Amino acid sequence: MSNVAPQIIQHGRLLARGVARHLLGHGVVTIEEFVPARGLRVDLMGLSDKGEIWVVECKSSRADFMQDAKWQGYLDWCDRFFWAVDAEFPVELLPDDSGLILSDPYDAEIVRMAPSTPLAPARRRKLTQMFARHAAQRLQVLRDPDARIVL
Image (cartoon, rainbow, N blue to C red; front, side, top):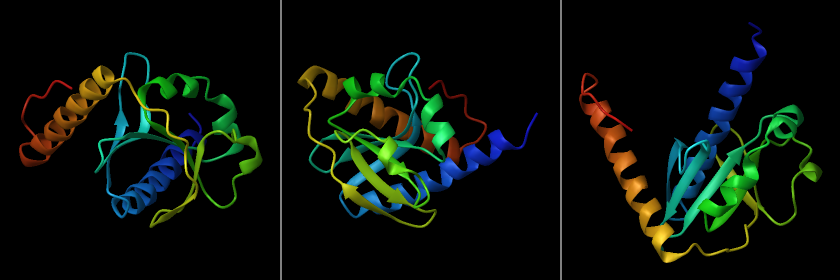
């Protein structure tokens, strides 16, 4: 197995860390690798202090972006959708009708706010409950690594 895949994963996680730190300042708490529906796994899902659901997809390279065939499926599961990339990423590849965050491992900046596409109330309620349960389960595992948790 090549070292390329682990390097891409690590780079993406570092971008996610910078984004998560930055979003706290905007009243948005985040969870990494959240599964809103079967077959979907978003890099970061955020819950704003106003109850909005944000999805952030972290892309480490042109190849990483070009191989992502699922991102459009995430649009039905959020109020705002963002791409997070580093300063070297060719941003002209990214759709103009989504948000853009420039990130590094330590911080980030929202360059383009994602347009608001409000979720239906029932879906928002379900996602908010899933978010809360997922966060609580992750905290439980930190407190008790031997706990049997079903996510």
